[in-house]
Amino acid sequence: MQEATGSGSWPVGCYGGSGVHEVKISYDLTKLTAKHREWWPEIVRRSHEAVASVGIRLIEVPVGERANITVYGRVLGGSVIGMAEFNNGACGDVVFCQLNPNYAPSIEMVTNLLLHENGHNWNLEHRAGNIMNPSITPTPNYWIKRGAGGAIEYQDNSYPTLKRLFGGEPIAPLPGPTPHTVRFTKQMIAGVYDGYMLGSTAEVGD
Image (cartoon, rainbow, N blue to C red; front, side, top):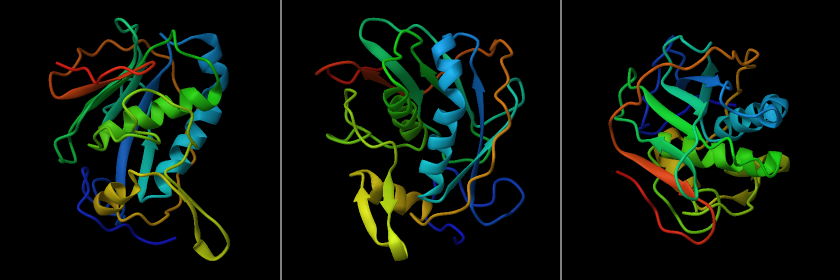
């Protein structure tokens, strides 16, 4: 494990000057389903480990406390299953990550959806194939997989961008608290955002 490098869409040292790209995140599960809530501890574990492998440390905070990213359920129109906002590169920026509660085919695919929408929170654009594909497709629930001695066994095609932004080297993830289920009442933030859809459909957004 080593300190992160890279330009960062959230800079190094935002919290505590630890020398890594730390991002505060909260998970409001009130508008997600019982199935989502059952799966959530494992989804969070996979998500936090996936981003730690490229140099991002997620700090989970209770719902209602200021977070850089707030993940919550929202029924979205048509075939849209997720929506997320891009960040402005500042430590104090606050963005949303919306998951459609009607989408819950498997723990793997919901994790895929969360990784995709968080990818937009990192300022990743759509990229055909892998996690950032414009429409959801089965793909491994990680950005990179390393084997013995750190040899790369698998690499998502968005990994080079994540490496440029966050250093691309593994750091230790923090153990997260049990997600709180306080109702989310914050107004949707105006800004650039991107939708994720089922099937072979085009990118949407306002």
